[in-house]
Image 1: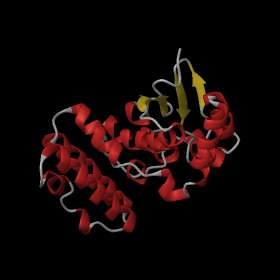
Image 2: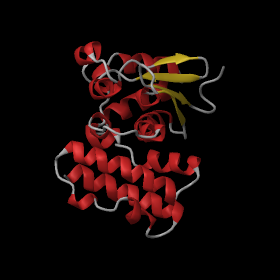
Image 3: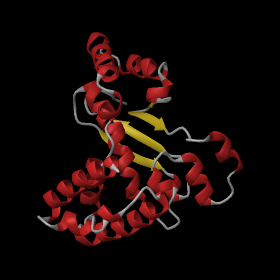
Amino acid sequence: MTWMSDKMRKWERSIDACAGIGAGRRVTLGWEGLTNDLEAVAAWSVAAMERLAVEVPDAAARHGIMLDRSCVFVEEFGGGDIAALRTLYLETGSPAEVVRAMRENPDRFGDPFIEDDAIVEIRRPRDPAALATAVTPQERRAAACFCPLVRESCGPLPLEHCCCSSGWYRGIYEGIFGVPVDVTVEESLLNGDDRCRFAVRVPGILQT
């Protein structure tokens, strides 16, 4: 599971930087024995998040660690799409034009829109048909979420697990606007909400 190895190494480095050398390995203990059994991986992930809370008691620090663990758009799809949006912004100076262009490429960027001082991302469900017939919270998570660890989890995952998705959006928008952005999880299936909603704030560019 190369994807898991890369994610764990990234996670360990971020935890060590916050909590000291060795903390990362204590949190990720046992991951090397995992297989492609996603249910087992999900159970391990629940326990790992509990260990993270012990090693890093500060919630804000854990938030940053989960941001660092996220998947990266340019690693999965290359840098061309982000570079084109960056050029569009530099030419127009218009966040609205950027968001319009993103909506024209929904397979890559979904349906972002500007609301007040933020760009809002409402995550499309992975399987809309399954979501429409889902009854239990677990069924809804499995149908809606793109994260295999969430889909297969039978136990509770803390809301900060979704900071991993926040990091995905952070990479996109920092690449486009060239400045640090703040991404907030406003709604999440893990919190009992009907959808996952993220607000992206770009200081100095989006103003109320």
